Amino acid sequence: MEDRHFDLLVIGFGKGGKTLAAAMGRLGKRVAMIEQSAEMYGGTCINIGCVPTKALVHRAEHPGPGSPAQWHRQAVDETRALTTALRGKNFAMLDTIDSVVVLTGRAEFLDPRTVRVTAGDDVLDLEADTIVINTGAVPTVPSIPGLRESSRLLTSTDLIDLDHLPKRLAILGGGYVGVEFASIYAQFGSAVTVLDARPRIMPREDDDVAEAAAAILRGAGVELVPNAQVTAVRDLDNSVEITYEAGGRTHVLAADDVLAATGRTPATAGLGLERAGVRTTPSGAVEVDGFLRTSRPHIYGVGDVNGGPQFTYISLDDSRIVADQLTGQGKRSTADRKFVPYTVFMSPALSRVGLTEREARERGLPVKVVEKAVADIAAMPRAKIVGETRGLMKFVVDRVTDEVLGAALLSVDSQELVNLVTLAMRHGVTASELRDAVYTHPSSTEAFNEVLAAPGKEY
Image (cartoon, rainbow, N blue to C red; front, side):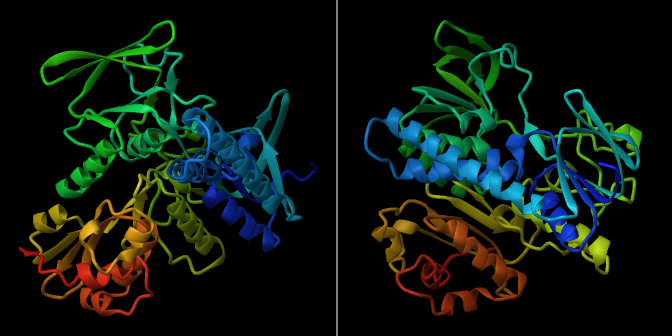
């Protein structure tokens, strides 16, 4: 490589970085994409995040022939094949653009415009006008005596690629990652125990929504242990022993494997950010403004590494903001994001957008809350057709303006339904308009006709 100066250098092959690299490359800009592992072309989502976990969700919900262990192994093999294919397509997406070069190696800043790439004994120093940090986040392993040293410790990255099906799986953490894996592995046939330090799972949700989700998990065989303070982890010959405090007593749980599902930490270690003059937050994230500029205006932070919501679609929107800075009017910012939805892919999925009932009432808003169990929604025959009638639908509506303030959808197809609700909220479509719209039949969407017509509670 004779010319080592680039218009754009991206560190990390995640959604935001690869989208921006491709867009700038197609404009004829010289772009360097640096990825530390050939197993991570395409980023977290397709390799160790969204795609493989949701593939396992689907396969757990639709078991095939053979024993649970055999079906689990087949599901893991099929998921590996899927991620391998997607990884190759993602690499080709950039590799086929003449002005883009993909380099595999570890990146570190030497100064604000120079990045060193190291691969074994090979070292390459590159310069760029614009640099994008897109290194994502890594699983957080809490400092519990014996946990990090345990041969039975798993992170989410490990669990999606596990060759064996644990007969007994202990999960530390009742957040969204913990809940998803609890649902997946209970359906595969594992005896799953969730040890949560908090009073209940998914504390961001309303009590009734969280309890409905907990009831579904318990119905699938998951044991939920609230207020559990894990104090020690110890390996035995063929298992692991977890000691925890709960209810004023000391308990010991035996398991085959233990999953640490206690959050993710921005991946900034080893980047040499101090040499670039890039500030970080107390949590270790790259500090950015509303335009995703770091303390060095020509260096941007996109995706999970900037401490924002850890969703692939947020990383995608990050790329749009930076692209507008580089080639547009420079007006687009994170402040433009309204009503960002999310889905927890338990079975059935829980999707939510906007305010919870608790949040709306704490703000003193005049609200009407309508809610109905999926099993009781006569206008939603799809749930009965597919044999999934668990869950509920809940809407929080401004009773003065009739605007939808928020929705929690714990139901079949909720990951699709929530996008329609989000679009309605962004464009001021009222609850009455959603209620009275004409939807296809039989579909899950027509449940809105009935749920939003319910009397509800007013505050």
